Length: 399
Image (cartoon, rainbow, N blue to C red; front, side, top):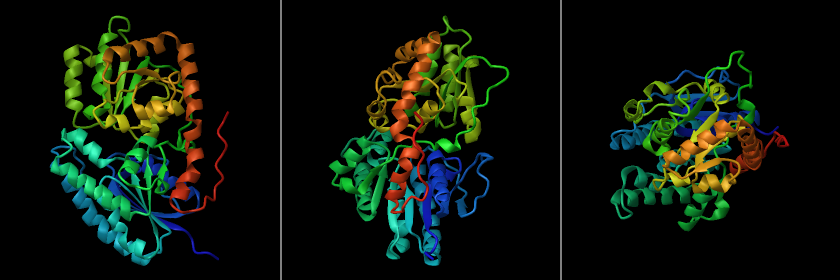
């Protein structure tokens, strides 16, 4: 009898709070693959459905995550690396892994897989972010800045050392190829949520007030300020409309102050971070889902999970027209507006609220467009990237 397959996953993200990390773990468990997971401990209440599962061993580091000041990132990366390195070494000596999956940030975290790689495990680096572009946009750095030179060097070393790479979009793959990475070593896997994990669509007996929603980390790049300004522009025509913001972050105080200054503070509800199932239950009854990412040099590369969650839950979406999003969703599937254009967003929200029949038709077209990159279609590609044959046959997409 062949020995059981086992995979080591290393992620400086909290489990089960991080949607893509949760998806990756659950897929392997569903395939009968045992998983050892090194990750951060989440600060939020765990989802009820994420009870301990056979085959999963989780090792958590308790580390408070803060986005400011900028050097805090470096300290957190080093702290997690220094914790994960001996843990991964010890586990790799104790277990013979079929594969090790490491996600960024940071890129150099992939080197915790050194012992496992020596023991013939396949090492896969999942690149949620392209760190040189992210660093340049976040810190406003020019191309010649030494910090970007270091980021590019670390990325080059890490991508050459890993056996295989996973990126979230074709645009990210093209950038890596332009830097000399062989396209044959890259798999494109959007951060599509697993359909089977979505909570049931139960109807509320008493419908609440109509509201629009956005959910994200509260940083300037995700454009919640644009949604607040759009709500202000709709105040005369839709005085009862409410914007619900799911998420938290260092930009929250600025957003609260903006809503107060505009006089819509009572109609912008900051819900904070919710357990995933609770967030999905709130999203599915929203009138419109908003994706207002700013084109800041890095926003153009993002393909946000929240967009895919809106589409999966049949919520009409008003989205900034960004290259990666437009590459996946044709013009008639999302209500597009130019990035940062609050007036354009307000017009699209108003249109979707006025004509609910057309809004629902748009949501259906978006769901059809997403069919080719639903998780049930992508899961075999994920298993292949890890060098593992899929044991579970993916279900055919629903017509």
